[in-house]
Image 1 (cartoon, helix red, strand yellow):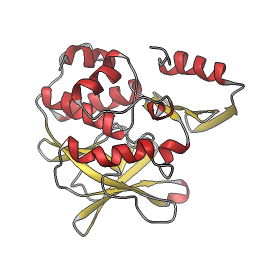
Image 2 (tube, one colour):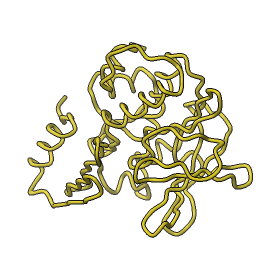
Image 3 (cartoon, one colour):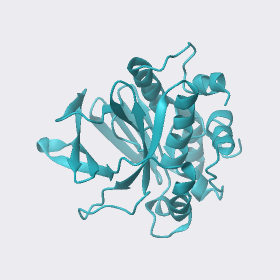
Length: 251
């Protein structure tokens, strides 16, 4: 891997170590630089879970991706930098109180003095790595998260309005290989039941909020204030992709 090119892609132009402070710096920089997006699915571009293909897409062509791509490649960067990384299989929480199928989502475990949960591929979630074995809430600015043990699994929850905790996903602690995620990656690219085939999305964290294109809607959150509007046409959509996310259809 061309580590220098990857670090440049996420705006880091200095050497980084393999400690907790470096992990936090890399995690935040990645979220502020590489969008969570599923545009390949809607543009007829096959998503290949191969390090070379992912590097070309995310680093060379300066695109984003969804969890298997973003966390899959980020894991390789961390390993190149000396971190001990495992791929974890997660199931995303559904609106009816259940969870999606196994390998519905990929998260990462990084072993330092203790284990950390790392995830640059879930969209709007925690910005700093979470201590995997911590008991109770972990506060990050106005947000709070917690990881609860439920049997042999862990459940990641986020505190919302009214101090109500809502699960985001649950995961096991077994380490997996990238190839094990391929069936669900194909499912999310092709199945009409996958939310990724039903709506296109491109979302990027900003220093004080988030900007998202969801379908033909622009959503901007700044210091907790949310604004949204419907775009005029595809020309405006493409212009926002270029100017706000650095993505061009013909790149």
